[in-house]
Image 1 (cartoon, helix red, strand yellow):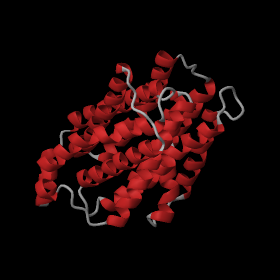
Image 2: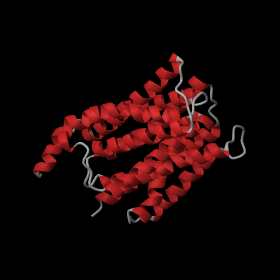
Image 3: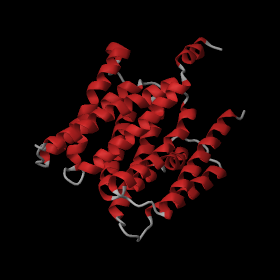
Image 4: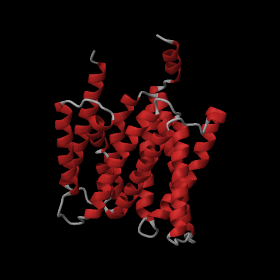
Length: 300
């Protein structure tokens, strides 16, 4: 075993890593609940401005504590720009979808992220995708169609477009992160990404003539969205430091039942057979893809 591997193993704490990863999932669903509560009353621009701005303090503190003067240094600027644009588009679509669709549908549709990554990998990463994974992608998207139930009550074409836009741009972002991870520190890229988001949505806030909410409840909700989002990003990084990504990946699908339960209990949403079966198809297809990718990497 090399010295690098030994150093990496010293940082592993799989039970703690999994626990933090599950806590991050609960944080993500909690943030989604807060966004869905406040979205009908405030512009998405305002929510995103608070989210990005209030994410920065914790991220900057952790990055400087860990990396000192090199905390803001990146080398692949073009890829960083692409990652930033894709990330901004993904989160904007996600928040907009929460205002138009049920929490259960938005949470479930976002799990097509793995399907989109598999679809994009041959074009953006030059990876070969076998026929088994292509079939899993097709089956997974059939499950997504079941979830959105075209023509059913509550059907929103714009909401569906945002619902699929969030995982699509999220997949592009993760592909860019794979490339950035080969040379740049994740904390540095996170600061640049969130800083760009805070600046962009602050300018849009001013340009659109939006006003800050004056009621205490809205200000507290916006503050919670931003602060919880900073801890959510910190928990993602920490969980992957303590446990292998391949081990953490299946746990992220816990967001589907947690999101469905939150939608039913908080917003009185109904759990239809289409959502239950469609979400199961998406999750099983995605897990199969992850298993095939792991098997392929471990095969000489």
